[in-house]
Length: 408
Image 1 (cartoon, helix red, strand yellow):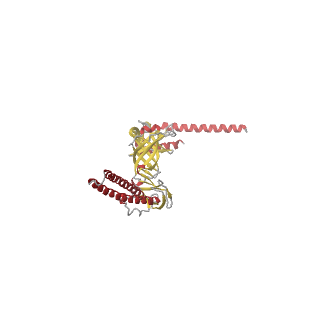
Image 2 (cartoon, one colour):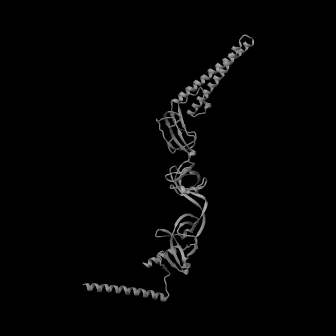
Image 3 (cartoon, helix red, strand yellow):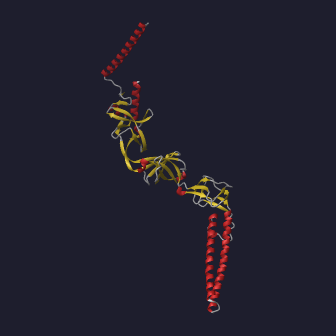
């Protein structure tokens, strides 16, 4: 049995040797006859040999990669927030109970519109104080008129020696005092009238003693037009003066806030143009500019906040949207661009074919950047001076795949 196994192994070795000799003889015969495959694989699995004549026949054209000066850019992730310069946090002007609410979040509102009404005892107290101030003014006017008459009478009596100098001076002093008391009373009217006008949101000049008791509640009005972002009250809510009832913002302009690494802060300048993209509109770019660079560094993240001001036509950008902001710098950097037609996908990776000599191409994977005018920026994989297949790249790829299959 052992002898039989040895004989079998020796027989197989001889057969393999004969097969190898046969393949070698065929290759030698092919070389002798002067026939070769049109496209052959090079030693590298990602390289392919194509003669100059075959390149011309297949429409394969090569050129040196193009280098352009492009603006440097810095990409920052962030989110859309309200422009606080056009945002109102509207509070209650007095303690009371909310009677009515006329808006919902998302509603458009105009400047001066009443969003809610609050029943407050402060209105009645202020109206009563104003009525009392009006009455006091009338009283002081009467006192002043009496003092003026007394002054005239004592002046006449003093002239005819029917009154003493002391009585005349006392009348003068009483007149001066009455004038001062009327001035104080009139000031009290103005103060109470201003207070009531602030509560009921009317022009103080329209208030008088005949209409001050017709106002029953405190309106909550928006000082600007825009959109209601928050509504923090409902009917029957008990509020105190200063309670935030609504947030209204004008979304015609929004902010995009983000953070820039400490090492990149020198690249960001106020006024630099910014391109903003959001997931909701992936094919659209919103243009803005850097509005503020923070003055303090976050000690934990080592970043500095940056604010971008973005016009928002159509109100498509919404607060809390995630955004990517590309900050363009004034300085430029050299960048390599290749035609889009030169790009091929090799094993799922974007690649170009680099001409290594007159008859050989090598597949080179590349990392891509921006696209413009039919050209694509190459971030990694090529260097200035490299020659690539700019047309007919698909034919080179086909040759590479064919030669790879032939090898197998």
